[in-house]
Image (tube, helix red, strand yellow):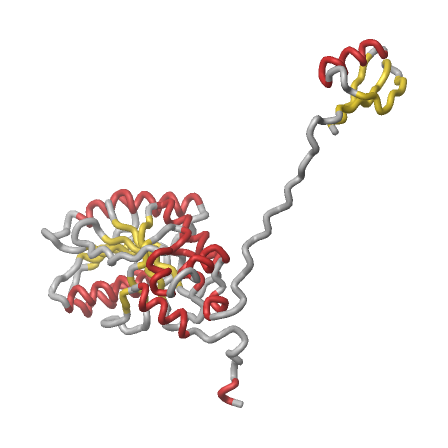
Length: 306
């Protein structure tokens, strides 16, 4: 039923308004006189019944099996349950080799404390052990000790470290690149929801013409990881490198970040060792980690000491 209040100087004018707007089938529900004339409440019965559709209930959470432990959103959990886990991971998520920095520079970005600097050191060590010395650049001029931390690694590796906290300085640092030399760029921790920080990161990314990889700790809240992945993807990230994969128990954040970006899963940090602290991510390897996680309700802290 459509109901409306009409105000007019007299009843004749009110009826004219009602017919013009609701038509001849309108019915009068109430009328009263006011200081300025009349008020009439009229209604029109619709030809068809009003159907109010129920709210579609959300897909039920997975409450049993190994995936329940990882706090994966219902849609992705259902997709992963459609086939053997390794197969469904390969279908639902993207996997790709980590760019090597020989063409476009390889730029690592992420929130503060994600492990970017240590990951840069691990990548530089791999390249040196493989016979190639990269050009390492840091744009982090904000965090206390950031340059010193990375310089400690590059001195041991015997590679050049360029400190370039602005886009203009980065452009000059890139002129020191040798032919075919890989470039690794470390960046300051960025809050992508802060406009100034996001703008600065995007300027550095654009100036470098880089491949941006999001470095994100495994074990974060799944929804938070998804939000961060979408934000960094908007700034140019196309790959995801989770850190602390060996220490994280719940991997829903890794899966949700890869799905939300969408970001291609590349490698993961699996320890503090610089020489061999990275592991290539594959659907088979990730499936093994997911299935090896403790089951919901079976992991009692301190049980082994009782």
